[in-house]
Length: 457
Ligand code: SAH
Image (cartoon, rainbow, N blue to C red; front, side, top):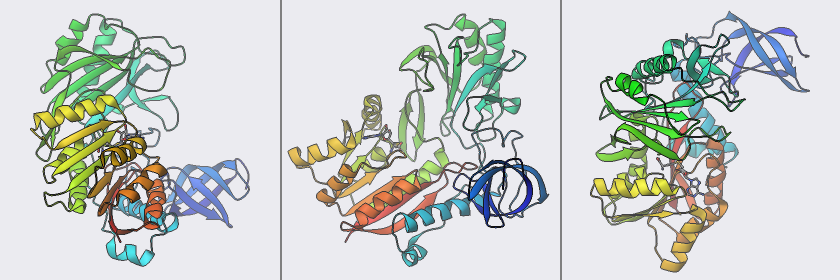
C-alpha cells in the first residue's frame, strides 16, 4: 500500500480514537469518520510498513450503525469524533474500550468482569447536555468575525453553523450573536493567535441546569473591554443572565483562561446543584460539564463508598470539593486534597454555603499531602476516593494508599489506560476489584468515565 492509493474496504473494528479500522490483504487502515460495518472507498494518506491512515472518500455501503450527524460540521470539528455512530453503538464501544484496557493492562480476569461490570450508564437524550462552552473568536478568510470550535488537532476555527453546537445549550447562539454584533458595531477586534494581536480570544458560557443561571466571560488580550456598556445592554436582556465578566489573558499561550477575572455586571459566579448540594462556580473553577451524568457518576461513587455515617473518607484530587461535599452528607469526616489553591478556596466556600462542617481541605500535591498527614497527624482512612486527571495517580500516592489500608478504594477515572495501570498496582497489593461502572459523560466524543470499587482482601 502506498500514498494516494484508492481502495475499497470493509470497516470491521473501531480504533481508540473512534476511527474505523479495515484490512486490505492483511494491511490495516485507520479511517476517520468511517463507522464499523461500513464498506468505504478510501484514499491512503500515509502508509507505514504494516498500517496506514486513509481518508474517507465515499461510502459504498452504509453500516447499520451509521446515523446522520445532527451537526453539519461534525466531521471537521474537534469536539465530536463519533457523532455518525448510533448512540447505542457508541456506548458499547466505550464499554468495550474500558473492558479491554482492564483485561490487557490491568490484568483483571475476564470472567470476573463478566460478572461485575455493569452496562454503561448512557443518556436518554445525548444532546444539549453540556453546561459549559468555550468558543474561540476569530475571522474567516473574508475577514468576517466568527465564533466556533477548533478543528481536530489544529487551531483552525470552524464556525459553528448558526452558532449553535448541538451538545450545548440553545442560549449559546443568542449570546454569541449579541457578542459578535457588539464587536462589529464597536469595531472590536478578534484575537489573532499567530500575530498575538487583537482583543477578544474566547467566549466562555456556563449554565446552571437546575438554577437556569447563565454566566458569560470574555477572555481578552488586553486590560479593558471598550464600550462594555454596549455589550451589557445586549447581554443583560437575555433571560437567566446572572454573571458577566471578562478575563485577562495577555500571554502567548494556548491555555484559554488567564488568572484575573474582572466583574462587569451581576455576580462573578453562578450557582448550581448536584443532588441537594449547592455549588458556586466561578469562571476559573473546574466543574463537571455534564450535570445529568455527574449525578449518576457521583451517585455510583457514593454507593460504592458504602457509607454508614461513621467513616473517615479522603477525597483525593477533589477539585472544588464536589465529590467531597456529596459524600460528607453520609460520612463522619471528609478530607479533600487538591493542587489548585483557588479550587480549595471554592471547596471551603461551598462547604460553608451548604452548612457542611465535617469536610476539611488541603492544598498540595496528593502524593505529598496524603503521606505527610498520614505520617505526621496519623489521620487514617476508612475509604479513599481518587479522581485523578488523565495521567492517573502518582505511584507514590498508590503506595501511600496501600499503607493507609482503607477498607475500600473508589477510583473515578477519565482514562481507562491509566486506570488499568493503577488497578494493577493495587490488585498486586491487597486490593481486589469488586465493581466496575462506566458512565457516558461525553456523548459523541470518544471519552468515557469509569468508577471502580476496590476492597481490601
Ligand atoms: N473530583 C473533582 C475534580 C476532578 S479533576 C470533580 O469531580 O469535580 C482532577 C483534579 O485533580 C483537578 O482539579 C486537578 O487540579 C487536580 N490535580 C491534578 N494533579 C494533582 C495532584 N498531583 N495532586 C492533587 N490534585 C491534583
